[in-house]
Length: 109
Length: 113
Image 1 (cartoon, one colour):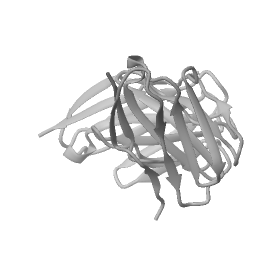
Image 2: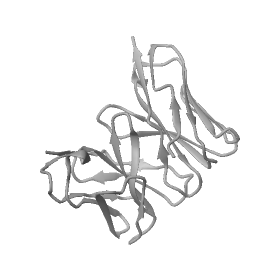
Image 3: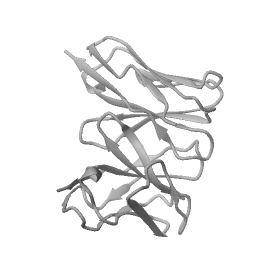
């Protein structure tokens, strides 16, 4: 079953922050975050394993609450280059990733 | 550097044609996957393979088949293409285990007319 992402779309001005949520109805082993630009393949951002850890990648970080089966992606001080569609992918063990429908992020000047 | 190569970026095929989409990875990964991506639907899993000669159906296998004769190569086959198979197809691979990163190819845009 696909994880549910929210919001579906968001528009930001440069420098603003955003949070993208990913929620699953299944117990999760890992959550993977990707960003995709139009016409290109998804690019890996980060992976979180169960344990509630938080990871960071420059101004992009994420958390994983395995009890709630949720993950959140935090984008701070957004830049124009952050525009794209963000996908979360979830795995319950040694299973293929199941992806959400994506969150379209637009950063404007 | 990690590399997943899809042989065709853009294809136009006629209804009823047999279509082969080829994917090769150079990372010695055990697991390989085929997803299709449509606007508003995200990435949906068609088939996957955890080892040579193995294949498993994903969420939307109807109208597709796959072949994995060598570890590095995973082919997606549309036996008789239909217009509702017009889509972007993404191949991916990873080392065995759900906690490992999946690497995507650049995608194949297929149009069936």
